[in-house]
Image (cartoon, rainbow, N blue to C red; front, side, top):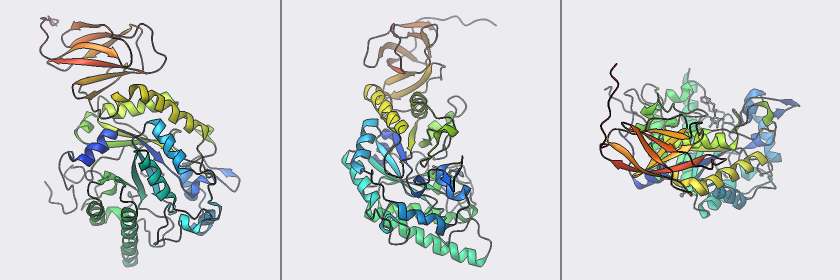
Length: 447
Ligand SMILES: C[C@@H]1N[C@@H](C(=O)NCc2ccccc2)[C@H](O)[C@@H]1O
């Protein structure tokens, strides 16, 4: 192995209680909320199709011009308790909030920046209101923090001169101050999810990324940190030059998921995916007709897909400038929540089952229970299950419903019947597993 000063601090999964809670939570929500929610993708009468939270970049707007939006920041429909109720009803166990996105506007009254809620007509500490409201509902709060800060004069994309170096030194001090401020003001925060760390200016300063993780873990014992923060001695990100994951969980699956057959390697470490409902909109965009918008079932399938491979899924919400949510997002939260009420036992605290993926859907496992989450019931009305060696199925029951017939059809192969009255939504079958070699002798084909 290559000797590294700023590589992985730990090999293997973290096994402490805080990480176990992170893992067991499984389903989270992202909140992308900032000045970008006011224009909602439109500037000077032109609607930009790109991600709405990047409008400043697409429309090539100066920071001075962009920050004038602060004078309009007064979300009269914002109600932290209502947001927390919506999250509770959706069944999410945690919410990741953009404390500061690339634009540099802070949802908390940071004393290190003049671009914060304190300098807007709203005045109050939005982040503080949200942390309290979510925590009061028993929901963990995670902080999204963008290192890249388009509003800061010392931010550099690369370091090509002595003054670039000096500017980034000041920038890292500013960033340390804001991170420490967040940890000290909101000590119930459970995680920091870093973004905006892909530029050369960060890759050339792996030392700082290791320092930032260490500083937060000293301030907040148990806090989890995503792999996207980290760059090693040679600028390698997420996984160091020896192939070891940095941070506490991999955070590269943004708007994509590992393949359930080809990418089983991800089951060896902790990971969290995040997804948008339109193709690529995190912040509020006024026109969702510009791209495909996933249906609630398509969102649900991605949640199950992630958990089936031992990962978490964070579903994104982009609140409007007035502090209310668009109807599609309210409907999505309600659908997911009603499904989780009936079937959440196949998600919360569940993990990869080690069964071979089948076309009808996904497996998850909790202890000795294996769940079949069925999205595509086949015309045969039989759900084929291929069990790992030494494993057989004793019984099967629809979650919240009746037993279904199980028939052994070959060595380590079973047909599980779909319910006679086929449900009109994805359904879950709970399997009782037995660890023993099946009694029957099967003849393998002679080829
Ligand atoms: C979670 C999302 N990450 C931000 C983003 O800039 N993603 C685009 C991107 C993703 C990966 C490498 C470069 C750029 C988006 O604005 C969201 O905040």
